[in-house]
Image 1 (cartoon, rainbow, N blue to C red):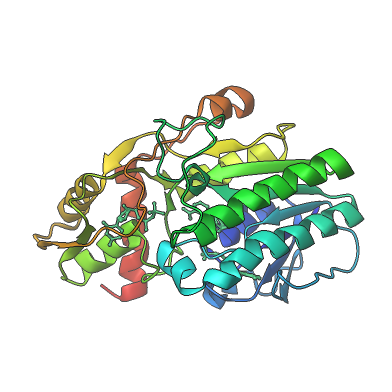
Image 2 (cartoon, protein in one colour):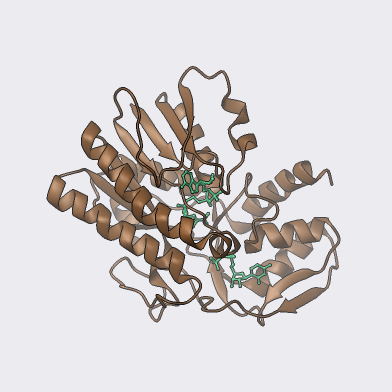
Length: 311
Ligand code: NAD
Ligand code: UDP
């Protein structure tokens, strides 16, 4: 298949691109480098099955030739990124989703939207099943991301219902691994980079908030299965093992063999107190579940950041 992947120069988009290429498909990558990096796709230069188009997907998209699949991953994803780029985040979730769906409809392509656990907001149901409608503050600082993704889900379902486009929606829970930016502000990259650089580890609030961390290869495998499945309704993909942020910091310290102090900083507005996916549907419908535990995933991630930072 010839597949368009938006956000291909980002963390997840570049790993997905690698997976589709490894399975023998052709990939057209599209990105405007807002939060991505040329380095993430540098290894694909010269691959005859990979093309790259530098383009802002919030503007009209043109791709020559046949396209059988569209995976829409373009969007700032880290809280500091979407707080720094609130309007581009709203645009890529709304206009970018509309444009990519329009392209899928015109080409007769299957479509997959990268949605997020943020559609559940600061959840009042725990763990979060797909049937939960969420608890989102639309006008808070995170609203630019959460509401853009909720709109994107609604638009995707409308293209399915009214235009018959074959659509899939993945709700991605916190994912980490090589090719995260060292300074993207997410908790795993922050703590590992701080530990490697001998700096205090920043914990927002008292560190009792929880997250469930999925290693990138597991996530990509779940998305790959979802894309080729028949499931139209949103599907959670994430690792159900839940940790407090303080537990994560302690594990990072232990694995790096450092005694860096913890530095508490204010909790960001509307920071979810708990987050853990109910993956019953992924297990039963896709036959998927994560294989890499936090310690194994952190080992690989630490190795990556050691190389990047030269430490
Ligand atoms: P990322 O910032 O590394 O990648 C996003 C990519 O999209 C970047 O390369 C950026 O330059 C590109 N981009 C942004 N706006 C664009 C535009 N208008 N036109 C073209 N390209 C544009 O982030 P990521 O972690 O790889 O996230 C990818 C997708 O997965 C996002 O849609 C995000 O919402 C979703 N997601 C990620 C996570 C996670 O834990 N990483 C969790 C939930 C959802
Ligand atoms: N966090 C933290 N220290 C950091 C970065 C993040 O304690 O240096 C916390 C953040 O407040 C949140 C959790 O870690 O409770 C996960 O944050 P992240 O930015 O990775 O993603 P989120 O799940 O909030 O989208």
